[in-house]
Amino acid sequence: MTGKVPDNWVKLDQTQLSAVIARHAWFKRGSKQGTRANLAFHDLSGLSFAGGDLSGADMTGALLKGIDARGADFSDAILYGADLRLAQLQQIDLSRADMRGCCLRGADLTSAVLELANIREGSLARVGDENRISFELAPAELVGASLKGADLTRARIAGTLAMQVDMTDAILTGAKLSRVDFRKANMTGVVLEGADLSDVDFSGATLHGAVLRGASWRNAQLTGADLMGAVVDGEILSVAGDARNLPQPAASIVVADMVQAHELWIGTKGGDGKRFEVAGLDLSGLDLPGVDLGGAILTNCVLAGAKLAGAVLTVVDLTMSDLRGADLRNCDLRAATLRRAFLADADMSGAIFDSVRLNERAGNRLLSANLERARFWGASLAGASLRRARMIGTELHRADLTDADLRDADLRQAILTGAKMDRVNLEGADLAGVRGFEAPPV
Image 1 (cartoon, rainbow, N blue to C red):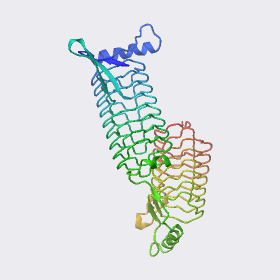
Image 2: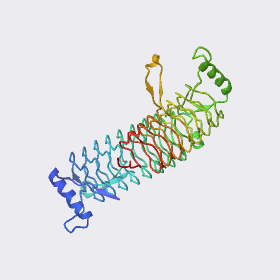
Image 3: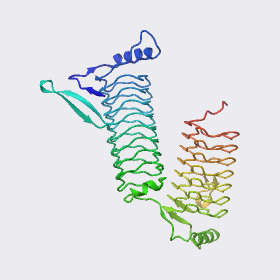
Image 4: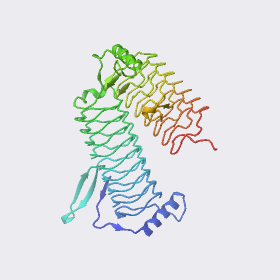
């Protein structure tokens, strides 16, 4: 598709735009009074579309700079070559929208839905001297835009400029991202499972806690990219030589000696021995059932398949560690920190994540387990106790919470899609903004 740039855009005011939106709504309902919205090459800058339905509308080449379209429905809309700079697009639905050549520089698309959206480069025709037609190929732009928490599942964003974009916790599963320029982007917590990342430039990007397994990395650039806590597989290693904070092999670490020193440290209340403290190590398959590692620090470590059933892990710090498939049955994880940890398919049935009361020297206060933004995809928490646990934004897709105790837990913005919730105790829990679960009426 190619759009033709006019000499002048048709400018509408708010009253005229509201009438267009109303007629489009009648059109969607099948009313004879309705008309499909045709806003191609209109100047609508600064106007409000908030909550409006323009699904399927034609906004080719429209000037939409600084519009307020929060919560609007633009699904299946044509936004080819549109100018959406600095637009307020929080929670907008842009599913399947044609956004080729669209400029979203500085726009806010927090929690927007762009599933199957087409955000590749596009060309616009210009009529020059002597009526000669020329074509300008322009990449779509996401430079400086915010897509925090946005859903871009299977979106096509090839060839896009996205320097310094903020995609914190965005979902790009199966997305086509070849040749995208993500230099210095914030990709913390982004999910790129199965994405095509051929020729992508992540130089200087932050990918803390990102899920990168199953992606295609042909000719990708990761110079200076920060992969702390990222969930990776062998495919990325061929291109990640210049990346930072990838977990290193633990061949030189004598774990048994470190555990012994830690036990002495516990027994002498820190007077002797040494706390078990490691960061950025690959400890896959660690086999220490029943071990006492209370107060240990294992940040940004790979503990995939670890066997720690019955272990004492009170006040342990496992921030941004990869514990997929780990055996943590009946573990004592009171006041543990698992912020942005990855626990897909882990078994934590019967585990205890309750709070502990600190001593007078530490203020005699309650310290809760911190599971914020942790990912428990398909994990078992059957019969687990999570009283007062901090679970803001925790992802519990398909997790088993049968008979779990979540009294007084903070579950704001948590995701419970597909979770088993039989006989779960949610008394006093904060469920504000929870997705995928409807609390029973009081």
